[in-house]
Image 1 (cartoon, rainbow, N blue to C red):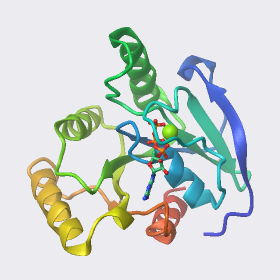
Image 2 (cartoon, helix red, strand yellow):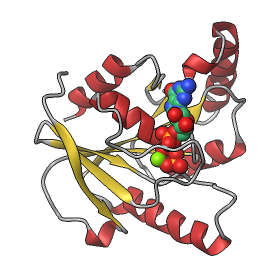
Image 3 (cartoon, protein in one colour):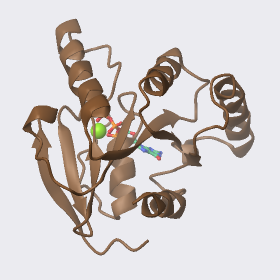
Image 4 (cartoon, rainbow, N blue to C red):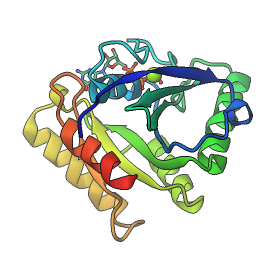
Length: 195
Ligand code: GTP
Ligand code: MG
């Protein structure tokens, strides 16, 4: 799919403030610092449309980007950022979860997992929650440029083995790198197929 144009649309503090418009939305969620905002920039071929940061907790609102005048990418805050106060973490979680559960326009959620690590409890818990709440999702394994191929394959197969205990068939999954654009065509084609 060709990205003809992409621009920032708006930031929302919660689903209640979002307009009831007709275009589909594709959201990006995952642990703080996993690379959600970087992946959006990579997909849209824009250097810093979505704000990224070396320190976790950068994205704090529901940020929407309009693409080709007919669909939206939605950048969500990360979950599980330990340095935020419990209260702040709780309110972000509420905002994210109600968006994911209630937003009619949401067609697919990309759940990002850092492929450099073994399967983390927090990611597994999130995926199980998404499954229980019938939130359509696929998985993107990020930062593949930062790990050797054999380690990548080892981590991937152990995570897939674990996921297979819960899902049959498995949701679609992609391997990505925001640095060398791995996964860009596959993820964009998938978005294209969905709407
Ligand atoms: P929050 O908004 O804080 O939840 O983080 P985020 O998930 O949006 O992560 P962000 O895109 O801001 O990236 C976090 C850090 O990881 C930044 O320093 C990025 O440059 C880096 N990063 C993201 N994706 C990749 C990748 O594919 N490869 C490499 N090498 N670095 C990446
Ligand atoms: Mg971000």
